[in-house]
Length: 309
Image (cartoon, rainbow, N blue to C red):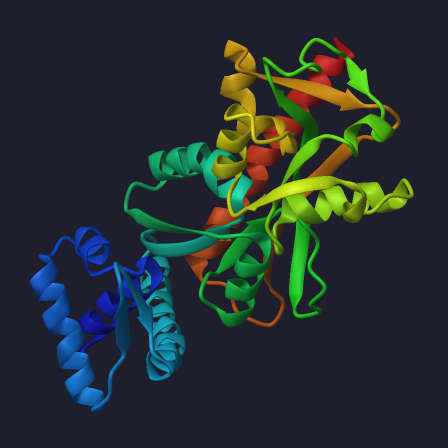
């Protein structure tokens, strides 16, 4: 069983496509297909099924994927440990981020991390909060950054960044020029909600619950699987939604979307650095956590200085 073939197999499963996996590993699509076929011959079973344009693992393929990610992670851990022993910070780090951190917070941080440690390769896995928590539990990622608290006792979470969410409407909406609206007005408006498992959805639910409301009180016309889909839905006039300010910063600047406060309700949340309590962190993972702490501490100090002045 070849380790390189396992890595290719994992990319096929994660990207659900032979062509996208081929681009990710810099091979031709026929070569990727050949490697998967060789694995299937080795295990004498079918590992993936083609369903239209999508590739999904069979039950056997899902079983192999679980072991393959652990094998690859262990191999990387060994390489990172030896590099650290020789005084080098290099290797591959796989981290997870829920929608907002992966789309808006982590990319600039990872850019600065690469400037400090150019020999490090970072893989960023994106998913909703539940997926990233699950990946952290399973060891598919060394750490995750998510927008909700986890219930699992095996996980350690540290708040690193605060986030503010607002009711977001298109500029043509009747509320676009209003500073705030009442909750009894909001419940009559078409509302776009994130999918089950989303940290944004959980945060909205918690704020409403504390104020005596439930998600069921909202006039939900659609549930979307990503922040981008919600944003486009608002622009298209499908409905309005409560979104993180950083996710719509560009639209707020140019005026295509407007933020509106809801009377007596404040939608604040935090993003949490999340890792497994009982798994030994790789040297590279520890280096990234220290870097992240420095970056977020700098932001907090800057914010406090602005308040003082």
